[in-house]
Amino acid sequence: MNRYIRRAGVFCLILLVALLLNAVRVQVFEAERYDDNSANRRGALARYSQPRGDILVDGEPVTGSRDSGGTLRYERTYAEGPLYAPVTGYASQIYGTSLLESAEDDVLSGTDPRLAPFPLWTDISRAQQPGGDVVSTVDAAVQQAAFEGLGGKKGAVAAVQPRTGKILALVSTPSYDPNELSGTERSVADTWDRLNRSGGRPMINRALKQTYPPGSTFKVVTAAAALDHRKVTDIDAATDTPSPYTLPGTSTRLTNEAGDCANASLRHAFEVSCNTVFARLGVDVGLDGMAEAAEKFGFNDADLKIPSTAARSVFDTDMDPAQVALSSIGQYDTTATPLQMAMVAAAVANDGEVRAPYLVDKVTDAHGGTVSATRQKTLHRAMSRSTARHLQEMMTGVVTRGTGTGAAIDGATVGGKTGTAQHGVDNKGTPYAWFVSWAKKDGAADPAVAVAVVVEDAAADRADISGGGSAAPIARAVMRAALR
Image 1: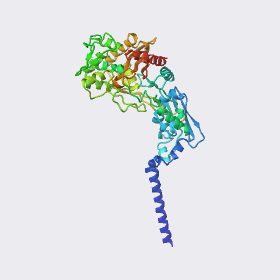
Image 2: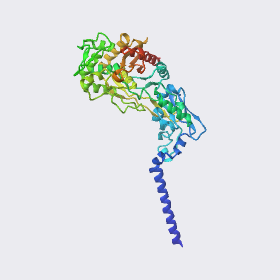
Image 3: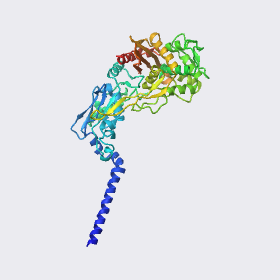
Image 4: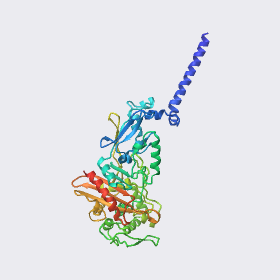
């Protein structure tokens, strides 16, 4: 009899071991596959069973959570949704997350292991912690100034702190209200369809995700390349450039909207924006030199994250001399995000160093304890200090007596560069108006802000001055807010 009991006991033990092994297989090795299965609603139920952590601006939350009483219980809410949508993105039960809501989702939803009371606690228990908070670098006054400055115009503004890389404003218009994407009602799907069908494309973050031909604002990069490669050694000396200038290997004659460009000095050409001088300088520097200079500013970098990934700004590395000439004045295939052009202006203001831009200052747990903080770092040295000082002089001249006088601010040194970027079939589209700039309060040790503004539907003529007329006043308002 004991023999049969022993056999039964061994058999039961084998079954128990098999059951435990299967449980380990399911919970450890197959857990991710089951979690990702569309039929599994446990993750979604857990995700929305508690309030989401908040995104903060100037120490105050610009997000919240509302108890809907439904199955997916807590819905995301947004204070001043359209103002901060290019920063926060959306968190939707139906359409997922975007921008900071996506990049910091683990912290906000409470699934980040760093929020657990003990190491590996989340991995072992698979428990969800209270959501943490994301403290942004955005300055509310600067963001508001950029948003109001653009008004009903289609365009974008990016503003950064040159010495640190902190992003002070990230605005894209027309915007949208992410509150309308929270919840599971039919109206959410209707809003999604309406926003995606809209000709204004409000769902695109133009400051971070949209690239444009930078036009004459790219002459900052070309000037830096020419000075660093010693194609120009005296910014007040004649450049021996004809006007018009025949593009190499072609019969195409490049002209200027500005006057007095024949043999103009680099300083004068920069202040009034002579296309011929900068096209010629780009050819003199050469493709390799121009590509190297652009990449030192951040062009051709597909891995820039703030922590959301920025669109890649492009300077072509396979061109003939005529194409290099056009690229050197921000046309042909050259494209840039507003954030990239703010980085260009910031590098000039920061004596040639490009600081890594970032949008998150730190993340905290539900009790306010710091989980992690962003470390400031230098991405590249874009130019020598002496070249940066020459560019500071020339950009200041643009504002004091050139095409950017609309950006001048009492009590501050302001440097800028206007630009008008042609686009469309045969360049017949309404030009994009650009302005890039930086500002330093009189007596201050460091520059306060660098700004890039692009206006897509500027009601302006095709002259370079349109950047000064349409975009410079917006930049001025943003800089004034940062200086305060």
